[in-house]
Image (cartoon, rainbow, N blue to C red; front, side, top):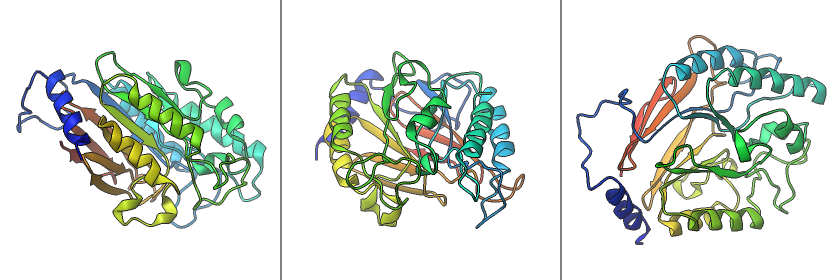
Length: 302
């Protein structure tokens, strides 16, 4: 397949053929093309601990992450879904209160904050409810899938919404099973068009996993992931896909595209446990991930 080569040739052109120095320190303070903070699977709610999930403590963990983000010269912060949870009675009023609280904590970041929808974000409320209680910058506000360019000379970011049932009806107030997630035809068409516009490299963000080919349990993957991956590979422009949902984390690579799944922030008792990261994309398209606490650092090379 010639797609990875197509992308690599483009990256060499925009970098002037520069060679990445092996001595480049991880996340140096030198301003490189793109730097962003990542958190996922906070599941914030006022309820008791269950299966190593410390729901109440997600706020404290997030405060620590935002403090680091605010002193790290980032272009934006993105959360990869399941921002909040619900209580045992699935009360929508309480759930919206949890969402407002965790959104306020996230918006303490002194910059742009973007959201990816996760299945728990619609556990007892609608997508419209979630979107009206959270804020994305500019044209992305109120959208469940969208794209944006954080910097004029930098990668394009594409956010996907995989929260649809097998018949492509949207998740709404718990009318779904978390193991069944799909991207509908109209969103696939939109994705294809987005990848045909421009020629800059692309980073994709999604809650559920797209790398079903990697041997990861299919229950955590988009049901029609193969269709999505075909579109990404055909474009020859995608550097990496950042994912949540699978709390233990995961990594794979195919045809030049990295699939990096972040460990869930909710897992483990605070302060011994937390999970957040800063990613830095260099001029060649290599991505350096600085993980904090339980999140491991990693280099996603060409």
